[in-house]
Image 1 (cartoon, rainbow, N blue to C red):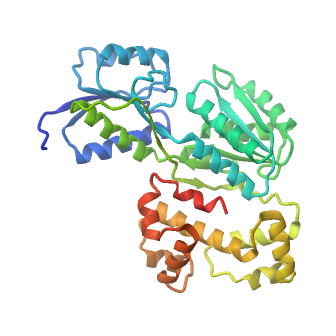
Image 2: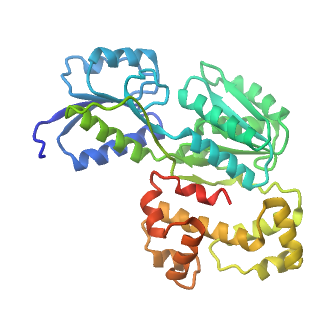
Image 3: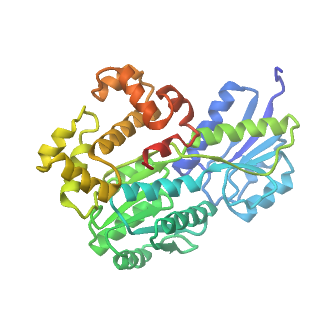
Amino acid sequence: MVISETRHVALLVETSNAYARGLLVGVKKYVEEHPHWSMYLAEHSRHETDFSWLEGWHGDGVLARIENEETARFIRRLGLPTVDLSAARLAPELPGVETDDGTIALWAVEHFAERGLRNFAFCGDERFGWSVKRSEWFAEEVRGRGSTPHEFRMKPSGMRAADRELLAAWLTALPKPVGVLACYDIAGQEVLEACKIADLAVPDSVAVIGVDNDELIGSLTTPPLSSIEPNTTRTGYLAAKLLDLMMEGHTLAPGLRLIEPTRIVARQSSDILAVDDPLVAAALRFIRDRSDQNLAVGAVLRHVGLSRRALDLRFARMLGRTVHGEIVRVRMGHVAELLSSTDWTLQQIAERLDFSHSEYMSVVFKKYTGMSPGQYRRTVSGSVARQAFSRE
């Protein structure tokens, strides 16, 4: 059906952070394909409650990040088709689209565990529903591994300069080495700054990973901050699509539609190999530093000075896999990274990663993941595919 009537849509989405701007990119992509929208957007922050800029507006629908009760009341007064883009669920009668916080917690714990960490902590901000959810999922994942989760809760008013001392004291008291998941990148920055105050080495004593992959925050921190990248573009696109259906007269069930994150962007803040066996640690570092090379097991053995049987026994005890299994896991993880973050052809990826030919790379990839590179690339934007590289 061809739509000729212009639909007037208000975007109550903040422009002050990378996550929300990513949502707006997703909305823009939808509108590029469906140019019958006229959008209304004002620059504002996450806690904005002044919607006077919409006075006299006669709209058809709303996309909103409902993060406070004032916004929820305003949305209800409008009485228009609305899709919520917040996990707070302050208007539970609405359909919503949000990042899958369970997957974020899973990937973070596995990211730390792969590096040999056995202590886990979460730095959260109770002002936000998504932070609370991430905390709950994180604690569940940690307990499932037989460990005790630790948590620092920022004050409801947000972090103040003096609060870094409290955060530094909490970090100092944690068992070491420890992996800390910060609820978002700004909290990750606070953790890194508090580590400086407490004279805690990052990542050797405290490994840190944030959420949102805000390039500005990640590059400003010292060391650079690792981060889980949510699929904000797909989230915004789906929200716009759902709103279009509602404006056409369709009734949608309330509740969240969850979108899985895209990838973990590993930077120096979590670049640790905390295994008790120094030879295994040396072998792991050697393998990971050469993920773009056709690395043979023999080269690893020569690097650490052990026989294959001896090193395989140590790997099995520490990691539950062989040296060859680790090489394959790291190599296939690099293939997956390029599939999800570039539009390179299979031949280009194979050449970049020193595979003899792309057909062989594809066969190994499918054997490892259960799907072809093409299938992976089609599904990674919203599927569970990435989990294949953190569970073996």
